[in-house]
Amino acid sequence: MTRPARALIDVAALRHNLSRVRALAPASRVFAIVKANGYGHGLARVGRSLQEADGFGVACLEEALALREASIPQRILLLGGVFDPSELPLVDQHRLDVVVHDESQVEFLERARLHRPISVWLKIDTGMHRLGVHPASVPRLWQRLVECANVARPIRVLSHLANADRPQEQQTCSQLSCLLACAGGLATEISVANSAAILTRPGSHRDWVRPGIMLYGISPFPDSQGTQYDLRPAMTLMTQLIAVRRVEEGETIGYGGTWRCPQAMPVGVAAIGYGDGYPRHAPSGTAVLVNGKRVPLIGRISMDLITLDLRTQPHARPGDPVVLWGRGLPIEELAQRAGTIAYELVCRVASRVKFTEEA
Ligand SMILES: *Cc1c(COP(=O)(O)O)cnc(C)c1O
Image (cartoon, rainbow, N blue to C red; front, side, top):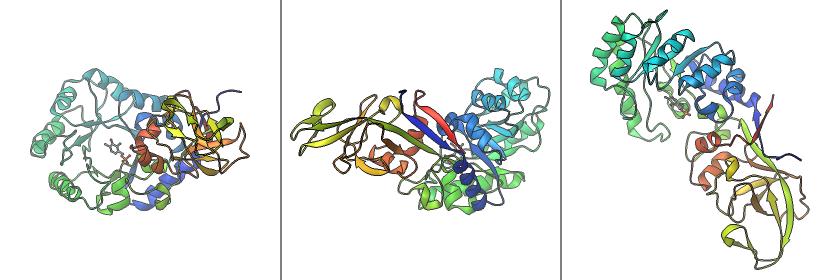
């Protein structure tokens, strides 16, 4: 038998989730955000599955080229722009859109020798203070872009929200009004909404929305689950039981002996661990599904294995299916228990896990 750890990708769920974005933001075009290997789901797979998207957003040139290699024809936006002027010929050759978030990138464009002008999105720092140009410098940099022969028309504007996942947060309003104040006079296309803003702030949708996490069926909010917004989980991480043991009362389980059996009981061992991307900080009591029913994890997570309390499933046997997250078991619940966010969990599924697709 080969190692049974698998990530099942539900292509129909990806499409469904994109249709949810369309329904929520009917007047906007959609950049499907597929950075970090399509949030761990497989870049080319997600690109091919989401042919209905108007464009794709990636973190770097390598990701954009991988999409072009997979024959993805849509607009592709480099969310961080180019890091070095030597990337611009490839941007030109593969017809990529670039973010300009710093004056140095305006200079790269001014100095480049290209076959045709490049589509540029000027990123404004409206309060997140990560990437983006200062609002006060927008008129000046805009003018330089307008005068640059290497920059295509229209030039567009974009910003990113720091607190859209906290709907009560005032900062989102001030970021949006800052953006409109900066971009209002420029009469161009605007993009600002991530998943959280798509779900809660129709006023932020503007010309282009940029959903990431919701496309994968996951809630962007810390206290809710994707299914509450009619999203469907696109990834189910599964494996199998490889042993069922009987352990005596008072004996401890696994490294450090952190869990002690209160009675003689069946203990299941499943082939998954932090070496596959399952979070090592998931505590005893975290739920997994065995044969579709919840059972608690017990003891520490190892690199290749986890141990399970099978008292509610005394008949479980090696080979029985185990689900770690996805269909039937919200990843958001595990993320919360393990002190992380679902974004990190899906991004960190290891390459030794076999990916399979389901239409
Ligand atoms: C990652 C990212 C998004 C998508 O964010 P989600 O919370 O996953 O929807 C949108 N815009 C930018 C600039 C990003 O980096």
